Length: 215
Image (tube, rainbow, N blue to C red):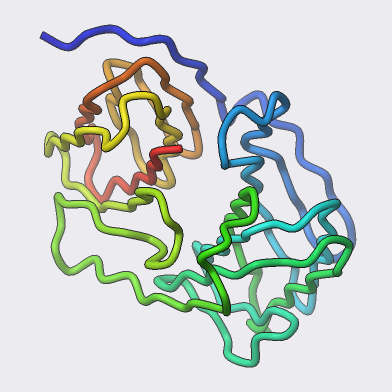
């Protein structure tokens, strides 16, 4: 029997989007109490020819995940497109510039901000292979804690046993809908779960895409 655990659901419908000439951006999650390594999650849509400039107060580890389109990031001289991820450390006060490389369309990406992870010494680019459906695999090879993405068909189920029972789970539905630990999550809804030992979820739509991390 599934044990009900404490949670906080972050509904996509209630988010506020900040719109400029260059981009539109919203904050999916912000860790006000700084009780775990994940400090914030943002979604940004870059307009044609648009760019986004980010500046963090302290040293950070950043995970960039394009959902659609192609981008280039300052100090990393390769493009990053949908189906790939980029992990790197950022210095305090240093500006990060993300540019849209698609000349005829917008680009959509997720930005995960973590406390600095000392094991990450350089940029780490990873290709995400969705050939094996109804399974999850790592988004970043260098983040020191479990971080996963998975593509699921309707009614396919997933299970994950936490490595550390003192940790929490952050999850976000990128596409489609899931029953996530007995909660309904739809497109771009996110959730934080704690006091949890095993995660269970079920896809409710075809080509449903989910991200979750043990933080």
